[in-house]
Length: 510
Image (cartoon, rainbow, N blue to C red; front, side, top):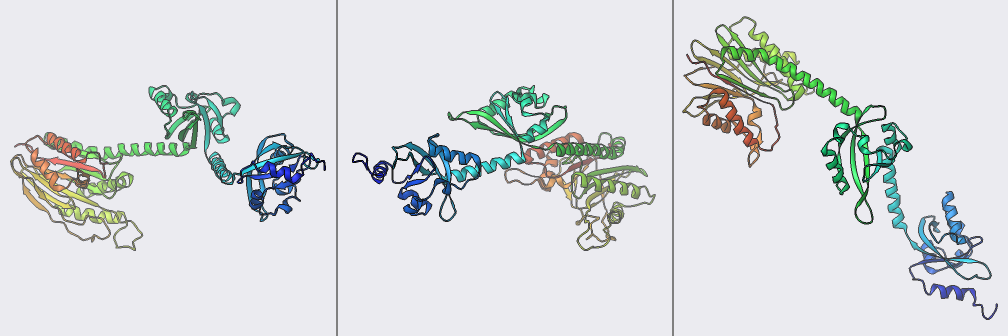
C-alpha cells in the first residue's frame, strides 16, 4: 500500500469519528452492495458481529420483494439517490427500519464505496403503517372525496364516484354545490356552512345529493378540514356513508304514520262533534301525542238523555299505543251500543274483559306473551238531574269549583286489561252532584309524570290541581289554556315523555 494512502480501516475510523455514536453506519461497495464496514451501533441493532456483517451483502439483509424497494436499495448503494428508507432483517428474523443518507467517500481497497448513515425509524414506520391501514379501511368502507377550499373536487375514491355516477376525470373540478341538493346550496346557509368548514370546523350530518342520472341520494357525512404547514385549512375531506335506502324507508314510515294520525284523529271526530252539540261552550279538549300518533284517546256518546265520556291512556305511545287505542275505542263503542243500562263501573268491567280477550290475556301466561292494558275514566253526565256518575281505573278526576280548592278523586288502582287483572274485577261508581259552575277535569298521566322545574321531578297531581284552582274563574277553554301554560313553564327544556290528553266537562247553565 502506498505510504500516502491510509489503510482502509483507518479511513473508516476517521470518518466515523465525526458521526454520532447513535447512528447506524455501513460502508458498502457500490458495485454489488458488499458490506465493507459496519459500526458497533448497527451491529448491535441487527444482532450480528462485525466480522459476520463484513462478509454479507446489503441484499442479504434487505428482506424485500417489491420492485420499488429493491430499486431504492440499488440507487442508495450506487449513489443515484442521497437518502431512502430500507427494511433490514435482524439475525432473529425481525424487522429493523432505517432511513439511510448516502455520503460519497474515497475508494476503499480500490473499490468505489458508499457511506450509508442511518437512523432508526421503526416507531415512525409503525405509526405510518397504522395510519395507512386506517385510511385504507376508511377508503374501503366509506365514500371519500377531497375538495379545495373553493369547493372544487380534487380527488375521490371509487365508492364516491360510483355514488355520483361518474369517473374522476369527469368529476374532477366539479363544485360541491353542483353535487348537493339545490335547495341547500342556493341558500345563504350553504355559504355560511362552507365558510365555517374552511375556517377549521368539523361538520357532520345527513344531506341530500343528486347523481349524474338525477337519482336522489342521501349521505351521512363528515367534512373535516386538512391543515397545511401554516396551520390553515387548505383542503376539505368528505367521508360519507350511503343511507339512501334507510332514509327513504324512514320517509315511507313517516308518511305511513302521518296517515295513521289522520285515521286516529278521524276516530275522535264523532266524539268531538257530540261534545260540541251537547256542551257547546262548557267543554274543552287537548290531545297531544308525544309522537305523531299515541295511546291516549277519548270517546263521547249522547244516549238516553245523558252524555257518556271516556278518557283512555293505553300502554305505550307511538304506533303501538295507537293500535291498542283503536281496539279500545271499538270495544267501547260496542259496549255502550249494546242497549243495556250500565253504570260507569260496569262499563270498565266489560272493557276489561274485552281487552283481555282481544289481546289473548285471559290467563296469567308464562311471561312470554303480551301484557298490555290501559288506565281509564268513564263519566256519565245526567243533564236533568245535574249529576255525574264516575268510575276510574288508575286516573284521577279533578272537581273544580270557583272559590274552592280543587278536589282530587282518586281512581281504583291497577288498570284494566292486563294479565294480572282478574276478568271478573269490579270498579266502584261514584255519584257527584254538579252545582252551578262546577267542572270535571280528567287527564292522562303524561301530565303528572312529566319532569321539569329546578329539581326535574314529575309535575304531579297536586301541582296540576293547584293550577286548576288558580284559574277556576276563567271559562272552560281559557282555563285549559292557562293550565297548559303553567305546565309548559314547569316542563321548561325537558323533552315530552309521554302522550298528554285533558278534557274539561261542565254542564250548561240551566
